Image (spheres, rainbow, N blue to C red):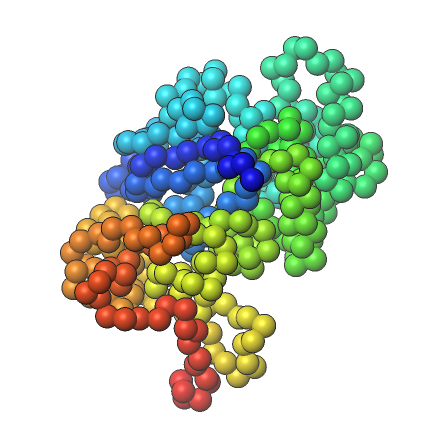
Length: 345
C-alpha cells in the first residue's frame, strides 16, 4: 500500500500574544504532519493551546496582538506564515475549511443561510448566481439538511442547534477543500445530534478523501473518529500516536490523568473519578522544565529543571516525559486508578 501524501506540515511553530500584562506564549514549539484522508485529533483541557494552534493554520488569530516568533506552516509546500492577505483569501474556505465551536454565535443572524454558504465563492467571477445556489443546495442536502431549498432561504434563528451545525459543516465543505479543521464542533449539541455529526464527518472523509483536524477535549469523540492523536498541555505537544496507542499504551502522566477523569463502560457505580489536581501553567512565564511537572504525581527533580526530550515508544508513538529515561523509576501509566467513595470519607 502506497504511503499517503503529506498535505500539511507544522514545523516548530511558536505563537504568542501581546497583552497589557505581557506576552502570552500560547503555542510553544509545535510540530506535526497531516496526511491525505487522515483524521487527526488534538486533545487537551481548556487553555492548552489546541484552538490557537488550529487557527494558526489559517492565520485566523488577529495579528496584532498575535504574532509568530518562529516556525513554518507548510500547506502543499507553501509556507502559510509568509503568505500575503490576498494569498490567504485564496485558500481560506476553498483549500482549507473551518468549522467553529459554537454555531449559535458563528453564523450571521442578519443573513440568510444560503447567502452565508455561498460567501466562499464571493471572489469567483466564473460562477453565476444560479451555479452558486445549486452548489449550496447540493452540499446542504449532502450534510443531511432536510428540505434544503426551504432552509436555503431561512435565517439562522429559524433552525435548531443541530441544523445550524450542519450549516456550518456545509459552509466548510461547499468548495470541496482538502482540509477541514473542526474546533470542538459538537460541544453545544446533545449526544444524539453529536453522534449524527460525527457519523457525517466520517462519511464525508470516505466520500471526498478530505483530511480532518478534530480539536476537542472529549476523549469519546477522539476514540470514535480519529486515526492519530496529539495530546497538548501548556502550549506544547506532550504525547502523540495512533488512537489505540494513546488509549491503551498511554505514555504521559497528563494523558493518564485525562483517562482517569472520565467514566468508562467498566466504571462501577460507586467509583469516584479522579480529577487532575492543580492548575495549568502560567503562559506569561512558562515553566522551564516539563509543563506538567507541578501537577504530576510522578514528578522528579529533573522534571522541574529541564524540558524532557521526545522519546520513541514505537514507530508512531512518542512522548515528552522523563519517566521514559533509562534511570527513571518504573511506572505503569496504563493502569487506571480505582477510587471508591468510602476511601474519601
